[in-house]
Image (cartoon, rainbow, N blue to C red):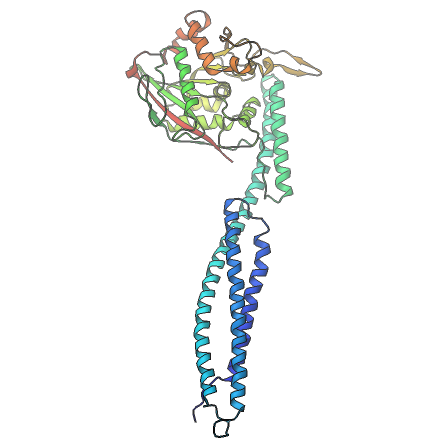
Length: 488
């Protein structure tokens, strides 16, 4: 006689396996949820992951409940089958072929089909959750790598800062000139900040690196052609003035200020203008000043961090980024170069001109700074340097006139820059206490425009080294802008 109904032993085995699967899904939710919601993964992606997990956790628990219900259904059918197998048949004899047994078998078939669908659905849940957990594990692996990188970076910054301070001592031994008060204060502040960053990185096993006063690494974009003179703006970049005078040359710095935040120059920019009057090109590099005030490193190198690095006498990230932009612009090593900058841009120009390696790559013949403290910067005498200042602009005096420490007092010292210093008349409408008005780059351009036909300004303008960069012919000029930035 054929047997219809459930194999009781297999039914019990299936119920047990369904119960185990139900427990496993509940355990997965209970084990993963506290780890995922602990908040180790910071930022928008982490918030998205935690939000998604709530839905996945509910699906796991729903699958667990469905499996538990399925287990109970199998056990109920086992009990029914046991009763059907032992109960009376229509003729008084036990027989598994009775309708009860057939109904049990039919119910089991339906359940098994439904269980298959449930398992397919829970398989999708496992795949989805597994993918998300895999993403999280990948993120954790990335954090381990980032931690190692942070520890190395923080330690390297301490070593670099110690090297910079040691460099000041070496300069003293090799030149006989002690470091200035400003260089010592700025360098010491940088060293303290590096120590703070390293302490935080070590105490958090590299998970955190505050990057306080961390000048990072330079980046520079490809040069973009811009208009000259009356040419229309290109991609939002205003045209560079024709360099027909000192004031117009300084106008290139104004244009570079305006480049920040534009296409291709998201942070800061330098303008590189080529003047070719038929006897070979000469290059004017115009550098803007500070455009962000912050103590934590950011992508813009023209900031407080860069100011401190330059004040310490170092080649700041801004300086290195300018050099990188000049290389990418293809400036020949034997072409005359004029560096022009306002405020931090002037400090950048001076530090570049003072660096022997930079001068070995570029033939720097002229430097113009305005509103910049460069008295402590050792620019060689063969670089024709002009330093402009307003009477009540405090910024160019932040180097304390190259004063040196002398116990409880400051010792006066001659400027190391070798620059021709010109104090211009005060800007119209700017009183003694008007810090911004006296330091404004447009005010400097106006002051030079009104006074460059006589005195020291006229002498500098008419010098043969300067004349290589001055022309009133639009056809002899072309100009580009290059984005500069910082990476942590």
